[in-house]
Structures are given as structure tokens and as C-alpha cells.
Length: 390
Length: 222
Image (cartoon, rainbow over all chains, first blue to last red; front, side, top):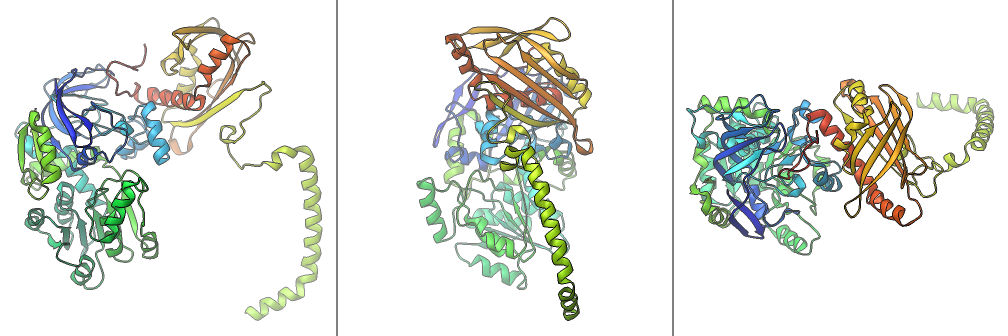
């Protein structure tokens, strides 16, 4: 089959690779009909995440048709049209039992789990196409994918909904939703969102659906700010405004009740601290650039909530721990517990209370995926989401 | 209020002082007796930690043994986990280096393990302790190429979380060329190996399979 494979920094290619097969009883094989490039794939593209190996198949946002099912799976059948969560979860362990699917204890194979245990203290769950730290599972930017624990993850979607309407259930829609849920929004709340990429935009949409009084979006790409505005957010372009001052003034001096860092480890930065971070990163003293996170912590009101859907992998420097502690902030974070949100979000899509198609800026064949990566990485203003068709 | 308390304290000081001296003397005497009984343990007291978490391991009397151990919580009942482990023929399903275990009778079994260079080693093992639902301990015969012993303890986890399983494996590297070779295999990151085996056991018991990203590999052997 054809698949998008990683070969090094800014070097991804479409190669011919062996077709996946059923390995374990609860596996399924999915023929992929739509797959997308995620903002977090750019961290891989820029070689910011360790333990990628040349030839690894990328992609964790995908959907398609079930073409084979293992003997241990009685809930899926051939021909089912499914969206697959990017988090692989067994559904049986302590964490899955508590609906903390991205903390699943069993989906990361034991030999790769050792690495995350060293790095994070405990092993993390398996993820599709996201380095060997998360299991080394082949991703979904391909014609076919093997889906482990397929009796727990994939959600069957009705034929009346187009791929474009449901594809983002795989990651960014539940990720934006969980980011907003982590804000524990109450009446009158202001939620400030750093980053108007796909997750940021879905977080804005979700926060408004959850009843936020106002949502303020921060970015510097005019087109992305325009999309945020269309969703009903007030916007701040950090290139032309003092973000902290603006937020204080827009909230009557109180500050945002909740802040969302939807930027993560490759923040473009606002000032001197980012130059410093880039220098440190170049000499390996720091792995992640947290400019947006620093600003969000400073801007958050006393006793407020910090929600972090943006991906971080390692260590940050000059972390404003004092501001976090002295103001008594609550931090909620983590990879998305996708499975927890799927039925509800699918229902909201069916009821047309959520639309995700506005995000898609480019549709291209899988064969052109390398170009899709380049555009998504380099032309971020207009390239908001690339959907690939195998 | 403050003044009152202070007055009270001053007035009572002699009595408290006497009591304190008497208590301290008693405590010293008790401590002395305790120390005499367990001098080493007191000197290196590590707190309420399992043996496997001690920095210097635990001495079983073998020459250069390596002791490794690990605890996992498995969301299955104690009796089920005990029963699966107690049938030693199941061990190769989650122990990577154990190729085969032939059970001879209720206590004895013959193990075949992978050795470097595509070779295999065999030895006899006897169950030394067996408490249904609680504990299984086994030990290789004295003439095994690598003397080894194992012990797995099953305890109820709190609040319906399943079972805490603690496994401890000890190896004794022998003299001689074959022994050295075999020991090299056993001692190759034995801590990591024991941890992985226990995690595979957990995966198999909780999910019915062993997670893998390799095409066609590491699926549970029937």
C-alpha cells in the first residue's frame, strides 16, 4: 500500500510499504477514506519529538471502512464506516475504567513503554503514528491501518454524514472540547485562548457552546483570527497589541477566568523570552518553547483555571511557577480522552450544533501529502487544515 | 488567655520535666534492646518499602545473586490471576525468554529458556511454597546452569481495584563458561526484563492479548 513516511527533519515521502494485517484478536483493519495532517504532526515534521525512526508511517486523524476484524472483536463488522480515535486504549485497565483513556496502561507495548516511564515516571498510552515513545504504531496517512483494541475505540458513523463532517472526531474536535471542559466554565466567565489553529478554534466553539460569557482569541495570523471572530470570539493580534493589558481591560480588571494554551511546544513567541528559548533549544538545554504558556499563566485571573491542550514533550525553562502558585491557579492538561466524548460530539454534529467543515482549507490526494506538510508548516495563515484522500 | 497558659506551663514545668526524663530513659532502654535485636535494619531503615525498592537488594545467601522485583495492579480477581500463574505451562505466554515449561507433577516442572546464540538451556524447577490465591514460590535445582528462584505474591488492591501482584526473581550466576554465557543472558538488564514480564502478564490478564506494534510479532502464543 502507499503511505506517508518520515525520513528526517522536514523530509516526509509517500512510499510503498507492506499492507497491515490482523495481529491480535481485538484488532481491525480499516481502509482509509479520509485522513488529515494535525498541528502536532508538525512537531514530528520539525523533529521536535524524539524516537521517530526513518520509515515510520505518520498520521493519527483518520477514518474509513472496516475491511477485516479479529476473532476477539464482536462489536465491529466488515463494511462498518468508522472514525478512529488517535489515542489507543484497551478499555479494561484502571485508567480506562475511570474514562482516562489517554492514560491507558496496556496499549503501549512493554518495550517502548520503558522510554516514557523514564521520561514521565509512568508509561503513557499508545498513539497512532506518533513516534516510538507512544508505541511505534503505524499511522493513518496511508491506504490501510491496523487498529488495535478496535472493539473499544472506533465509533461507527452514519452514511448520511460526509467524511468532512466527522473526520475531526478522531482528534481535534474532542481535543478542543476537552480543553474547554477543563476550563470548568461558569456564568459570566471569560475564556482566553492562545492559538487559533484547529484545536484553538474548536476550543473557542466549545467554550461558547458551554456558555462562556466571552471568548477572547489570541494569534497573529489575520485569517485565523478572522475564523475565530466568525465563531463569535473577540480577537487580539499580539503583533499589534499588548496582550496582557488588552485582557485586563476587556475583563474589567479581573482577568480571564480561564486560559487555554492551544499552542504548545513550538510557540512562535512574543518577545525576548522566545529568542532565549530558541537559543537554549539549539544547545539542547531546553526541548519545548513555552512562550504562549508563560503569557497565559500571567494573564489568568487569581484563582483561575489553566487548560493545556497544546502538546509538550520535555522540559521548559523560566516557567512562571511563582505566578501559578501565588495566584492559586488550577492546572488541567493531558492528551485527549477521545473515547469519552465521541457519542456526545457525534450527536451534536448530527443535530448541526457543531460544524467542523469550515476549518478545511485544502483537500489533496495522499500522493501530495509532502506538499501538504510543507504548506501547513510554512503558510499557516491560509492553510488551516489539510485533508488527504488515499 | 495567653498569659494564663504560660502561667500554667511554668507551674507545671517540674512535673513535666521529671516525666520527660523518665520517658527518655525508658525510651533509650527500649531502643537499646531493639538495636541489639536488629542492628543492621535500624541503621539503614528505609521506611515502609518493599524489598525490591531497597538500594542494596535483599540477601538470600547465594554468592552473587541479582534480585529484581516489581509490583503491578491488575484489574482482575486474585483467584483468577493465581490460577493462571500456578499453571506454569502458561508462563511462556508472557515471559519472553522462557520457551517452554513442561509440567511433570503438581510441584515439579522442566523449563527451557533461550540462551545467546540461538541456544537453549533446560533445568528442573520445584515449587517451594504454594498458598492458593496468595503466593507461589519456586526454585531451580542446585545443578541448574543458572540457579534461580521466583516468588509471586497476590494481594487484594484497595477499593475494588483488583489485585496487587508483586514478583521477585533472584538469579545466581555460576562459574564456568556455559554458566557465564547463560548468566549474561539472565543478567541482561534483569530489572527491565522482570518489569516487562509482569507488564505483559497484566496486559494478557486485563485485555486478553499483548500489545504490539510489530506486524505479526509478539502475539500471545497459544
